[in-house]
Picture (cartoon, helix red, strand yellow):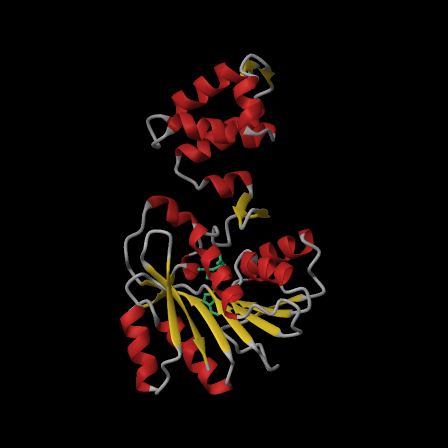
Length: 275
Ligand SMILES: C[S@@+](CC[C@H](N)C(=O)[O-])C[C@H]1O[C@@H](n2cnc3c(N)ncnc32)[C@H](O)[C@@H]1O
């Protein structure tokens, strides 16, 4: 590998990416920033500095050319202004999931309360971690059916020094939790089985995306558990077209204390149920 200036490296990486992915010049900048661990200002103001390209950068470029998500390549993802570790095996956090965290804070603004949160489907850990930073006296029990996801969540929980307050359990739904839960939060898989997804989504765990033949099966199972166990609050992300079915499902059980929220594009994206 020969050394080149920042400017030459960006040109070379852009040329390699260009036939494969859109916005190749921007992607080249992002990859080089992550590779050098510098910000955009540094990159713009150091165009003539020599760069040790090394094998790592070009293996990243090759992977990106195959449309592997940027976050899996660099092992970093930003959520709620914090940086988390991520790799294949856990869903890449989506920006709209920040709204689920906001929804919890809006619903339960007593940040000093000594309550027990449960999260079903913790994935990389982002939701419980951000909530644990906000609710300083709360305890969290978080479940996932994926061992790989729990391993990734463990790394993030340790990174934020929250191992004492966020406990992980392997299993399905709330089955591994016997304790009283005050607040359940979940971003469950909610896409209908068999829907064809964009190629970059093929890198993400399929059991994090697909929720069943209709898509809302896991959400309905969670609603049943919440009602059976009398869990006071339940905030949940959902698909943009699932509002009516969820509303009807609860009305049939005589529950109507349900508030829906929308995402940044104005689509229905989730709800909070108060029991
Ligand atoms: C959409 S991802 C959400 C991950 C993370 N909470 C986030 O918001 O980025 C759904 C997660 O639920 C997990 N999951 C799927 N079915 C489950 C089940 N029956 N019980 C517990 N977790 C489940 C998946 O392994 C995945 O980690």
